[in-house]
Length: 380
Ligand SMILES: [Ca+2]
Ligand SMILES: [Ca+2]
Ligand SMILES: [Ca+2]
Image 1 (cartoon, rainbow, N blue to C red):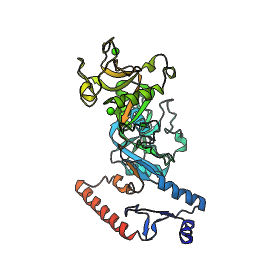
Image 2: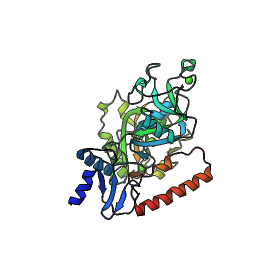
Image 3: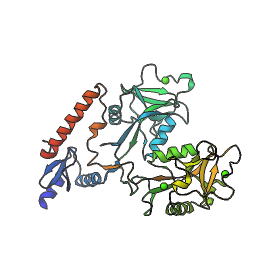
Image 4: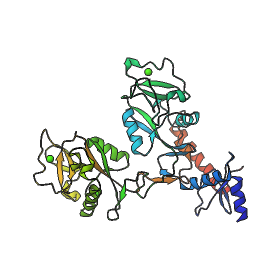
């Protein structure tokens, strides 16, 4: 025991592991895996750090770095959608707020530029990162002829592949990076850091009632970004769980009558009363098809989106009005990794100069190296 303590005081992290895979910066010994932290720390800090690393878990499509978790979104989005997507994933739209942040961001993309979280959408020219850091406190260099606020319509900043910034229109879609700081909040049994997702023992799924009202399409966007979809009712047990969840958000919590109905995952997909779930099944086949008396009534200009009323029965709704909504997600999607399996950040680092053939080879090389490290431990 004394022997182990000595190692801890020296600044080693010690982790008991049954398997043989662990992070490359941990050294394998007959006692377990040891990691040397070069940066001096007090014993208390070192102990905290060791505990902390053991607890780190997050979505596997995020890259683990000492600064936090990073995910590159290749499919371009407007700045507003990018901000929302990151928020729903439990992070924020990344900004190069420090040199270290900038370097990690630059490793992640090969496009000429990506959107950052730095914006002036509230007051023109007054740039801040999503988490409120003013541009004046962010080390930065502008690209040539920037910022030019072209047509007086550029309120969002890109990070360009040479590390410089440009102002662009927020509505022009571009790739972006989501970022989540290390935090003591772990993922729940629903596979998300969002504590509002609740697990049902009957259906083995998780559900969240969103009180922030959205249109049907945006509601589905939100559920999808959280790793799920608008809830599809497949059984009486599922309906019961949803109704109990609904009851936790009484009508009095909402403006006017907005809380009397919530969007769920079905719609009239050819707008001729062919009601189907989002995954294309007729309601009866999916498992629940009871409309409220008098519904569907296709009121006003046409109601093509599905909702659940407080009486536990279905209704047709205008798709474009903002209503609360309910999401459903599998607890095992998106997949959750702890740092032991997310160790190899190299697979997320883009090598912009190599072609596909080279990429294949470099992956093989990395795998071989990792294997050697696992058996021998790295040399210090
Ligand atoms: Ca510009
Ligand atoms: Ca379901
Ligand atoms: Ca209706």
